[in-house]
Length: 304
Length: 304
Image (tube, each protein chain N blue to C red):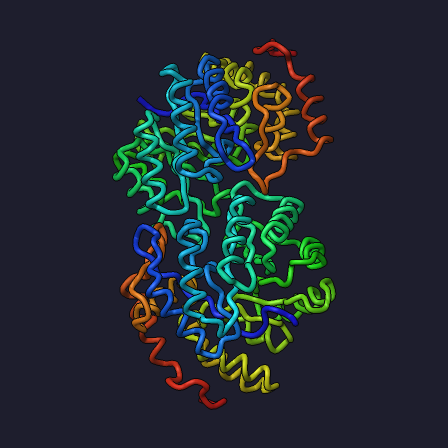
């Protein structure tokens, strides 16, 4: 079985202003997602602020998420860290807590070589036993997985998939064909960058790692279902209805927008970790106005 | 008084493979530098691996450095962190331990805005009381301080200087003129990127933040002295003699090279934090060979 597949929803992790996780609020977010029709939940991803939380807080969040999901959907847990030994411990914690897979990025300060990241990933996979989904996020980490490195890692036992960034729908289709050719059957090829992911799924990607679905899962669930049923026109119409949200993500960054959405929707009363600032009052109003333009019931008809 | 000024030497921080600082070895490195003629020591800079060490280990390193320097030279301590509250605590620790100034970078994961970094720096300066040297290192942090942000911060009490990156000697000379014009008198403008810094000092920069000087202080001390005495030809000749070292830095990165140098010179038996790997045996031989081509006594004559 290829794993992860389908829509993976990445919620924020509510915390206080010192980085202590509000496990009650987080449990409510995860429980809501677990019953929403998403195929998996990505806990402690970039949107979940993994790099801003201590090992102890990440463990508290994981335990709350496992309890809230209650086995209804698999959890993919971010286990990235600057140090290899820290990433090993985080992956061990995730395995112990009950995560199905670990999402392993290569955050860097001193720029890393491809060989260094190969060793990093192999060490984490080997010493944790947790199935590893590679997480390529050059904008955040300063490191880009080369096609050769991905092909090398994809052949290793314990490395089960990858979460790729996207630039545009066209490039994603070509990228998917190349990565499929370079990786073994059963290796899960997935994408992030919500605005490009309907086309990625239509092109045959295994997974859509979604920021929006972490706060508003219904639109992504409807798109993923339409693709699974072969109704590409419906998937594209649903995606087109989200264009105003994708514009907000591109203008204000998806993380800052979903924090605002969580507040507007009454899901969590929290703020991003400083130095990241919440959106301005003006931008929050823009998010509120955009939300009102969206179809109130998902899935809307193809022409709405 | 403008501070920092002159040559600031940035040693590595010897640790075991779990990130625990070898305070005895570190104290020896710092004590040697404190008696070498450098104007200040940069503890827990990028070369000192600040981003890879816990608060507790950074405090242990700081205390060892203060003890080893024994008041002979001021210490500038790296206090950067992803979270603002962590950076505040690190700056408070540095102030308490006896550092003269804090070197404050803006490491990012989620890309930061200029306003966010302004708030970040002001919060650290205000809540720690430690004089702050801004640390602009876009390659490592993913954030570039804009000229406007620097001008804004330089006007604030408590922000005493900046450590800038360099691209080339020519661009550094022009950059210095622009930054001087945009910052108040007494604001310390300094540079890193060792191969460009002799020219930066000749052009009138206040400080050279040196990686090489952390392991091999004599050449930089001689260059800084020649510049201070107005002997630019001598400074340039000394710098030209270091060209093979600068080539190594550009090929293998300065951090990896100074780790190898520390081993070759018998100063410390340690390795960079994983995932960063030590240089290959072949590259270490290249460093050894290069070391033998350098003048054995500094300063050499202008023509040697």
